[in-house]
Image (cartoon, rainbow, N blue to C red; front, side):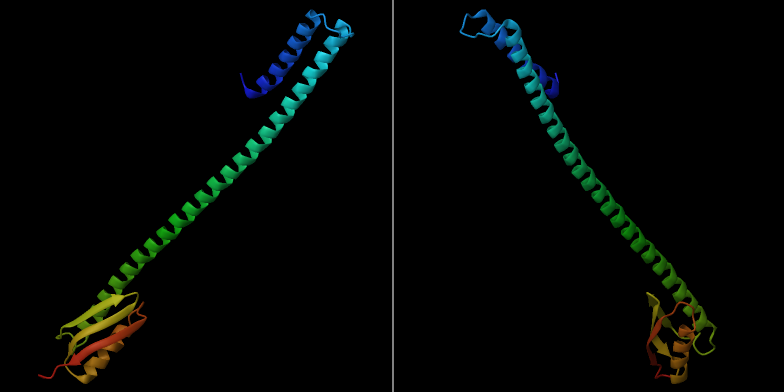
Length: 170
């Protein structure tokens, strides 16, 4: 039996039993059986009203608690979604950056290989976030500057760090 019915039926039953018990006793109650029944019904009605009020109060508290729990769940879901989205964006940027850096390195190597003086030299090209770092040996000072110019001309290059040295054996 649910709580509402218990709150309604139990007080009403007790009131009626009390009335019946009192009517069986020969006490100094001058009221008629009808008056006693009316009194018991009024008492039961009052108990039922109190039970209904309590049930409404409990229902309102349950509704408020449910709303709080629902809001907490929505917030947790939104936070998780935002976090996952941010991580996916960051991963996408890393992947995109890695592909772009690899492409830049390939293009700079191709530009250096196409230059008559630089193609015979060993120049290492490293790219990170669009910044190209050149290391190795250039045949002369002009080639050293030319390597920087060729690297800077490649699309996507944001900066060139030239750490080339001039070959002292030539």
